[in-house]
Image 1 (cartoon, each protein chain N blue to C red):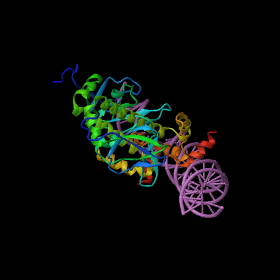
Image 2 (tube, chains in turn blue, yellow, brown, orange; image 1 turned 135 degrees about the horizontal axis):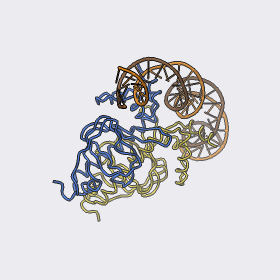
Image 3 (tube, each protein chain N blue to C red; image 1 turned 120 degrees about the vertical axis):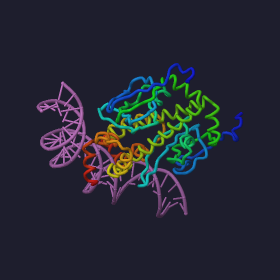
Image 4 (cartoon, rainbow over the protein chains, first blue to last red; image 1 turned 90 degrees about the horizontal axis):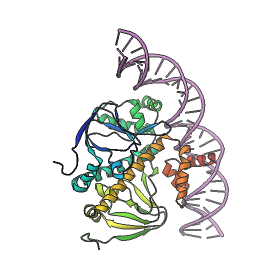
Length: 171
Length: 171
DNA sequence: TTAATCGCGGGACATTTGTCCCAATTTACA
DNA sequence: TGTAAATTGGGACAAATGTCCCGCGATTAA
């Protein structure tokens, strides 16, 4: 079915809360999310964590590292139980080179990620959290998952204490 | 030299301070920086500006929009006088599809941009500006350009007033 | 030359956010 | 079931940053 790829695409499962990509390590596989939600997060030297985004079905993990040939820049935790399609890095490159539609998909995915993170970055710097919180709540309400305050604060880049304050004022 | 591309690659020049890509508009060309430095920046509805990064020789502009087929998410200003190679969007796509090396270049460029902006985002949220400023100064000193305090503050996402305070304390 | 603008520096005060606590509740698990 | 751990909520204070304002010198344009 998948010629000359030297390995099948497998499915891997992880429990909620489980970490399956570790910041600073080599990446061996590229994943595509089949079901569930995950959170890529960066841990800084001062021990604080920043959640880059929440990713769901159809999103890709590890492509950036596979393309650049670098170690991972962030860890990834399962927020809900997740099911992932996994392919080896070599296989990923093979697909990139031989399947134009796949190449195009990854290209678009990366471009969209650049656009999204640029906008998120600008907003987070130019508005106060009190202004951003309502919009964020709307976004997260759309997905049906119960995010913890920890996650919400981690995504906003503020402490849980500050988040609590905002939630109180904002009501 | 460039078959079936329906147009040559041209060179365009802009003065320091001149804006040549406007947030919210259609993009007609993809640029590669031949010489000089530019700053992509996002203007929010509250009038504030955030400088995403400083880009120099060999960097690309407009690829994200060309790939996604969307309007621009940010404006781009020349920081120094710049010289740009310009190609039409159609030509850009043609190159992507027909020149594997070009495809690979763009792919790497996007991946690197994702990685860089992720790290920048995390740092900006998890450290105080007083901690970040020294590192930033080192980075900017490496490039020989005289950045204005405005630019520096815009890049850090803080007000000029705050930047002044930091510079004073930090001396 | 004379305004007018722009980059720069900083005082005074308000707001936002962090830090360090402690307590109540819920959740996990042995 | 019972205990430990995690989650949540918040008081009190400190630190970081924004806002508004003024003045100074340099550059620009009429």
